[in-house]
Image 1: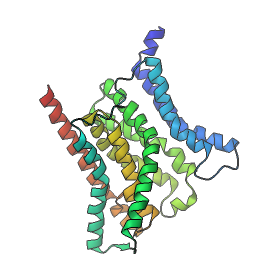
Image 2: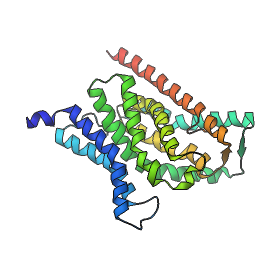
Image 3: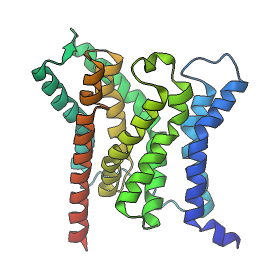
Image 4: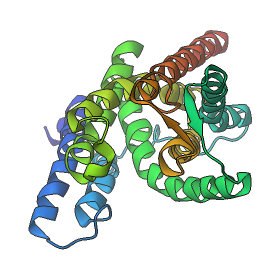
Length: 279
């Protein structure tokens, strides 16, 4: 009976998902007990970040199962996919920015290229570490376990994307300061995040399946947190009206989301062809 529970992937996946969805709220509870912590860098936020990966590691220890974790970088034969992972967000950002500049629906502030890229490099370095915790949870545990259970691709994308998005619930509803919600409500941001991350998930899952490594996903996520986010959110180089932001924001706008979805589906088609050739 003990061995049966130890080797029950469905039970372990349910435990993982439940703890992931609770992790942020456990962090909120911790912060409510431990007062006077720095905003944006509390122990509760730290717990929220690390608990999914800690849960995944403990579950792998229980099952003695490390084969599909994706910890090997697998550079051989996969350099092109690392380059793709690196280029996706800058490519979409540049396409969208050129488009909005041609339409004249955005304001472009003066900025120094060197200062901008210095800020991007610093942001990539910091977010690379943070995204090790995220990607080894979503792509290093959740995705391979859904594959192990033979979940079809579309349900895999939906489950993986929603778990990833809803993990952010406490972040959007509590942790983020009010400054972020001048043009959108907290609930609206959570809903937007669900749509966005389900669409993004296809790219991340397919890069993982093409390379059998989590590291290009860590790289891609770090670039996402750096290049377009620095351009629009942090540096304010580009500013949009409320309607312009909804349609043309290079991170979360409708146009960018459609491009990300298309890229993900294209990667899926490549992976399926590759699998057929390998049979």
